[in-house]
Length: 243
Ligand SMILES: [Zn+2]
Ligand SMILES: [Zn+2]
Image (cartoon, protein in one colour):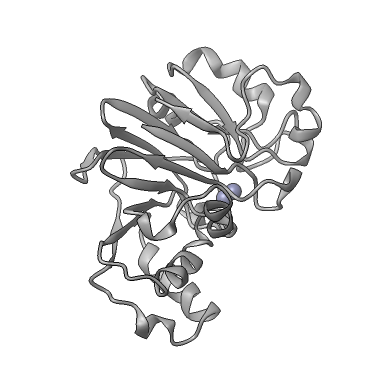
């Protein structure tokens, strides 16, 4: 399996990084974990064909995590696409994405072949089987109205865990457990704010995280200014990881 970091940034474009988006490729499928507002540009920059996507998973309903989906749909409409795109996210994901699409490009909804795009709401705290992979989601601590979740994927004998956006919470321990790759948000270095994790808190709890590899995502300005002090690797746009 190949993981390519399409975007590893926050909502503010800190450090010039694209919004959060990770591309997973196996022999059978192409999947995105989150699809922030800049993700169509990121996919093209790193030479991916958006029409090849089979799945988009959405951790929570903030624009830097799902705001790129209308542009992916817009791009599809120019292609002879015959395979289904399945978008999996929290409760209400279909309504939010279609409302956003309608605001950005009025009338586009009527051009969509609804047989080629399906929406599924994930169930929290239980393993769901999507044939090509299994998924377990965990509630995390972030803006509650965005329905924040961590995502744990079981694919091709590998486990990929993704924290989404969250401050420290005990669910991160189960989420990261036995993961081959744990992508963890680390918005701050020292700042102790609500809704996001800082590096010092992560380090204090690192012994509880039983994953083979950790990669930090979603660094804001204050974290980027202090990145020389980070001992855990930081995700960089364009980086490829083979698992
Ligand atoms: Zn975010
Ligand atoms: Zn968020």
